[in-house]
Figure 1 (tube, rainbow, N blue to C red):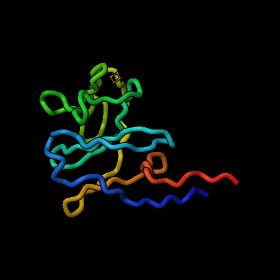
Figure 2 (cartoon, rainbow, N blue to C red):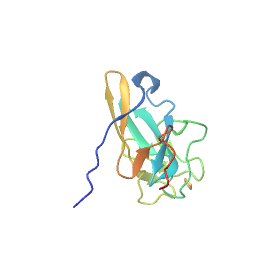
Figure 3 (tube, rainbow, N blue to C red):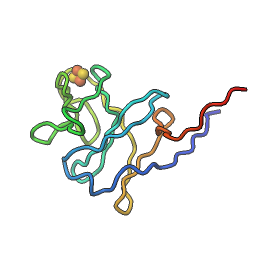
Figure 4 (cartoon, helix red, strand yellow):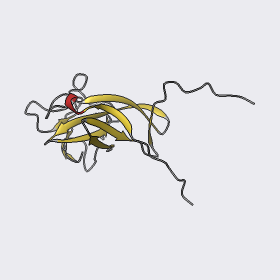
Length: 135
Ligand code: FES
């Protein structure tokens, strides 16, 4: 039987922080229990979010903090070797990312607030986690 995973939305940022094709909101997550970063940006009015990890080489992609889009503000462009992704769905459209796709993170906007939804593989960082106990 599959493990039942309870998904509780995590508050991410105010909707107003994500302007159309502007800077992304970048935050820390755990992927398979390891530190990673994710980003959310607004594209064609909709908030999309992905793990900040290029399909070509597993590294962060932003040019500067939160800057993921190309000069025309049309594509997500990896700053390392130029892999180019469709913002709407994370699909690779050019460059060395082949037939890959960015890892999506589910997000929703409600009443001026953006939330993200952890998955089995991508979890929130618990900053106030109690120290582990040994018995
Ligand atoms: S690491 Fe992104 S294109 Fe090579």
